[in-house]
Image 1 (cartoon, rainbow, N blue to C red):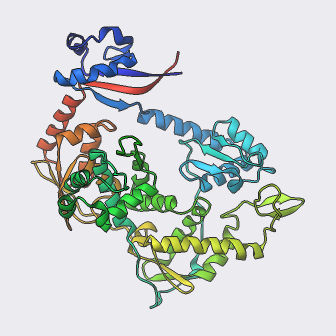
Image 2 (image 1 turned 180 degrees about the vertical axis):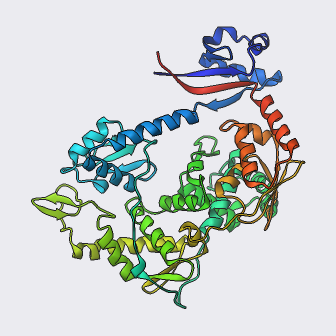
Image 3 (image 1 turned 30 degrees about the vertical axis):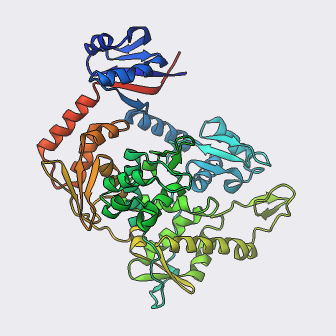
Length: 492
């Protein structure tokens, strides 16, 4: 396999037009189809000339199409179904403990007792060792990205459900609002690419550009993003997610579009991925249990922490740690040379109980639960996370002049990220107004197809005027006349 760049044209006749504009012929390699040719790296030097002559080249990174992904997922599902039960159990434990596709072996299995299962999974290509551990099979492993999800643990916390008490705290923050804000700021960062000063703050001129893109009047006026708590918190959240990186020399901030994976799906799914990312790697595994308990408590109920912990121990004793077998006894995972700790009820009270408490504190700070001594209950955001209510979202409105009107709670964070990448915010208030712009659409086409943009509008809007569809399609047709796809894998 080798990685190449492929030049793609909308029509075969464009090859002659390109060669007439620049000296392209010496750089053209094997023909993959009448409209696709492998090109040498020197083609990069010709791109500015083509743009100046009125034929800009849209640059993309190679991606797998839907059919390839579905075929891979079907193949892996069959492989997992065919695994021996013990090996499949180890894989499911690895998936439950994994974060961003990475799992620490000693957190998910017994490196001694489960070594054969780990070798089986590694040989099948379902997991890959990234870094060795102090003990064999205890290090960091990556999971195949197309694995089917593990089965959900069937929790029953009815015994812990109680009436809401009057002393429950008020929400500290709103995770749902934060997700929408970071989605909006991420889209603006993608368009502006601001620079940091040596003091660590954003350049004021770039911050004003962000303000104009965000429809934030005060930020546009003063250019002090750090002085606006809403947008500073959104930037801090993006940095905590690892979604923003800085080029060391220019000090420009760049957005990692892997953020789309965190925001994908429904609002509840986006909140779930977000909270998993912001809870420590060795603690996030208990979040499904907390989420299930909140769902069972419903809108009018709360949960007794003591009973919740007791039920969790009875139903999922190994939620945090798999027991290791050493000299015929169950012990907690440990490093070589450490004194093994018995895996018993006393250990649960001293370790797991404190770990659950730490997660509850973090979830409360994120605004998903309210707490009182020995009691916790879902906030409004927590009910969205736990999928307590199935509320129908109001429709978005799309006008013939390419304006999008977005009422409250009418789009998911992923939808907002895409809408704000397609244009700019004219006004941001209770109801937000966006204007689709050609330049923004062209940049969006670097990672998506125009049909996806139209699909988002049709999914959320009461109706999409034909003129909007025609305009977007024509803009896309113009932008995709010539495409340079990087990172295409070819078999020699």
